Length: 213
Image (cartoon, rainbow, N blue to C red; front, top):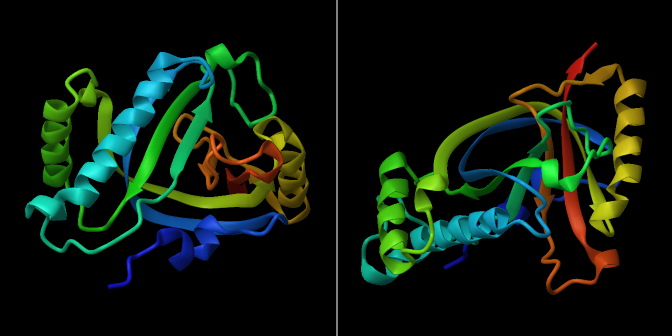
């Protein structure tokens, strides 16, 4: 049976052009973990990823012991995503004041059959399997991102500012303005595994909230 692959089925969300475009993002379900600190060195960030993948694969593999939720279907776990912001300013992906001050919400999209009850059951299962993880850091949310500009960034994460500058120019030229707030953030979707992929071959979707002028 074919597995649902969100990256392939929703190419407008996960496979944009390197040239910026405007998109209206619909409501989606996510498991999220919040934290603060440099993602390259923070143990809190590493634990967040363990929790996110642990819960996502617990739900995906529930079919193996016959505990799959109602409406379950075969699927590929969607990619890791991150919302990034700073306490003192509206972070736009360029004005970095120090990675140790990064505030982040790491998240993985969930299939439509996942509910709060399914999420809570997965937390209980993962807590028994890996008691060292603080699974209570995780939250299950519905998020409607709304109107955004996005583009595919190809290359190292540290080279993202050039792609972001292109997005800023596109927004201005097409009658929009960026719309960062305490609920709308710099958004990255990681389509490549940096542990297995050369920096110059990394693919990352960059998305910023916008509004019409």
